[in-house]
Length: 114
Length: 107
Image (tube, rainbow over all chains, first blue to last red):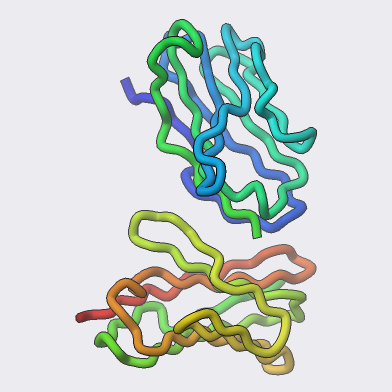
């Protein structure tokens, strides 16, 4: 299996622009997670989907962030408008069974908002 | 349409040398960014300039708005300065990136 696939791997944009991050989970996995990692705050769970349905979005920072999972093989995390403090590495992970089970992480998207 | 040109494309120098990387652009801009990308791929913002000069440690960035030109200088260069340096200019077209200068500092 190819593992969790994320795109783009790097994104540099200017504040105010819309940013869309993409994730393809491992085939057959029913849970998908979006995380953000910064030096200051470490790894934070943003949102968690199970069977394409958002189960817990309490980690989403504010209304500028939105996530969708239109089908079992694709999810997006959108930031609109982006701000410099959104600069971070955004990871997607997937598994079968939710938060208590081992999660398989993608390579991450490094986002820099100027 | 803004065109951003960097020179040189590649630069190899000895440790301790004074390094200059140039960036020129074709339209009026409101700001210019200098970015550093290390071999691992991570990108770091070094400076944002709209006029004059900024200094951070051994790095100095200058901009001449009239001449549509900016320079990034590295004093007392060190092998850890080896990276790709990219300038990005903000205009009415949005953010336009140069192709980058690949710098190698040899010990």
